[in-house]
Length: 251
Image 1 (cartoon, rainbow, N blue to C red):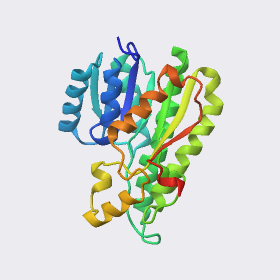
Image 2 (image 1 turned 135 degrees about the horizontal axis):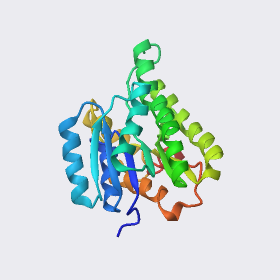
Image 3 (image 1 turned 90 degrees about the horizontal axis):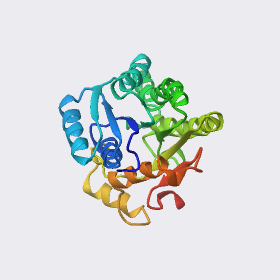
């Protein structure tokens, strides 16, 4: 029996990368998992099968466009109906538009903010009554080290991740007394499809040299951090933005 046996987890952006790794890790701990992502049915089906093999008590998936506030609420309702409870919400879905400041369109701004910041806000508000009725739960926001330090060509992304960190603190302050633990994970450079896309080998080598540990992180390492935050070992960790970046922001 895994530590999360009898628990149910909703993970957004779960069709690939960090989200899928988180789903697999929580599944391996015995949790039921609901995998949410936008427009990737084949990938979600594969991820669901992988979670069952990993040890999930149950697994399901749904296509949800989190640029819509109404869809973020519907996602929580669907996951709750499917699993009968929601003990863990991992707000992982996010996008990044790489442009120089001054070149972002209104649509760029609105879409990045909607998916990266508004969707976690709306989904969290929707899940809180469920968690309160169950006696507690865990909410984990996937922020970023770029919510703490700046990066070129990512102004909108940076501000959404900084917003998630502050949202984490505000929620933790209000919800801790209800048994709802709220924390954020702040990964540094991680070898995901989104991070590697459009970067040439020379740029990647330079970015790796910027990390004191000398390499990029893995999705499994991020998933392990999430698993810690929803475990009994983290029972006294609340409102924390846990940076795991190989030392990227220490210099």
